[in-house]
Length: 209
Image (cartoon, rainbow, N blue to C red; front, side):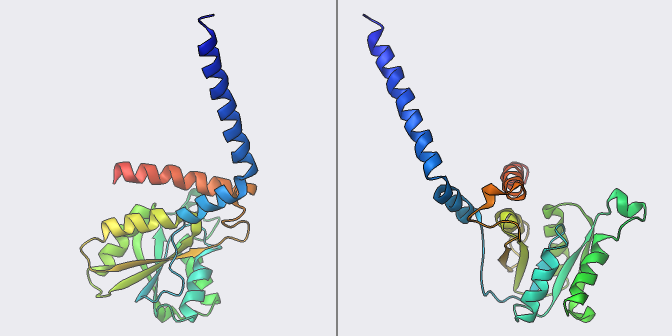
C-alpha cells in the first residue's frame, strides 16, 4: 500500500514525458525552424566600408561577397590567406587564397578592390585577428562579414570581442546554402552537421576566448 503514491508519481512523470515527446515530434518543424532563426544573425541590406570573406566554403562565401559588392554593400573585399591543407602542400589543389581570388575575379570583382589579409589563418579567431591587424593601418568604420547562416552568430561574437575598442561596426550577411535553409536544415545531413558543429564550436569559443 505504501508504494502506491510513488507508483502514481512515476506514472505521472512517464505520462508527462511521453506527452512532451509527442508534442515535440508533432511540432518539430516550427520548433526547429525557430531554433535556426534565433541562432542566425543577419543584416540584410547593410552597407559597410569593406566586405570580409571568411575562410572555408570557397564554393559559397566568395560568390556571396561578389554579389554584395555589385549591389553596393561595400567598395572593397578582404579575403583570407588560409593555412594550406596537406593537398595544397602536395601541389594537388589550389590554395584557398588563390581559389577565392579567382572566384571573385570570375564574378566581376576587380583585382584592385580585393585585399588578402592574414597569414596561414586556421580559424575564425585567427581571421578576427587578421582583420584587426589590417585595421591598424586602415581607417574604416564598418565591416560586413559574408558567411553561411549557421556560422553567423559565432563569427559576429568573436569579431566583436577581438575588435572591441577599434570603433568598427560588425555587420553580417547570412548566406543560405543551396542544400538547406532555416526551415529544413534538420532534413539534410549537411544542415545537421553544420548546426551541430557550430553549437559545439560556439561553446568552445565562449569558454576559451
